[in-house]
Length: 390
Image (cartoon, rainbow, N blue to C red; front, side):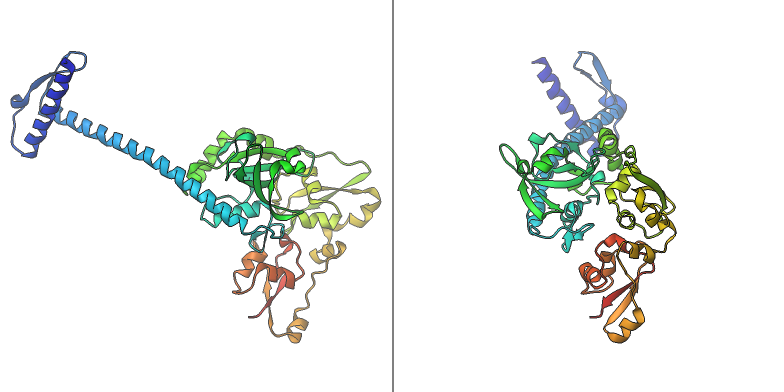
């Protein structure tokens, strides 16, 4: 009863003080020196200045409580935004079912696994990184029996030398005993399948993660990426950190190759008659990124040493011919035969998709088909490409 009386007295005091200050009258300290008792029963004397400060603190507390309530309300809205976006992403992704697989593809002309996941999120202006080594560090690890639509699933690379991520897919539906995923597979194209009906993926399953709320509210930035990367240091160390180089295969000899401008792992592999993943394993690489001047170890069978020993000194066209590809284009002759063609000189950083944007009505597929290009990364600086005039 006493406490209730104290509260009522204090509220009356605050009301009175607000009224007094609102009238802007000159009030002396002695006129409103009032003794009130705090919750511990200790008398407190408040002059006008102290009372105003106390009143302001009450207002700030009420504002803080209101902001906290708004924040809780927004969390519900974020949950709704997240759910709706994931549903839209899944519906959009399903429109590509049956599309052929395309190495390096990030457009509806064809996707690789991460290119597909990248495209369907970017379609909704969501800042998903291009490579799974980055997306895998976002958010939190989710147990395989707790996956929900929108979660990303990571599969071990085909190479058996480490746990590097080699494939990514997205969950679109949860069932009682499994889940359905959508992904672009090199052997089947864009497909939807029940995960546990695919023994290859089950046997090579690494982990799954769930993207954070900041991603779906488009608040993702470098600072958050750094925070999550630190939080997911174990993931980086186990699945992304450069691996220990694989041992030299028996019956082979080592050849060293120096990376040049325009080179790509797939190209170098074709010049030596080996696989891209073998080059990556031999050199402890966890990505396809190369630096000009980088030294790579390549192992070829001993009887083939003389065939490949001078690859490092050959011109690009000579290396392509060694791999059975001739990209030579006789520009003058083709222009005379067909004036409907024009020619584009490849520059640093170009790829078929970026070049197609310079020519309305021309797709990256058109550029690759008209120039006999099977791998987007095989373009080289200075190469001439035929562009059909519209």
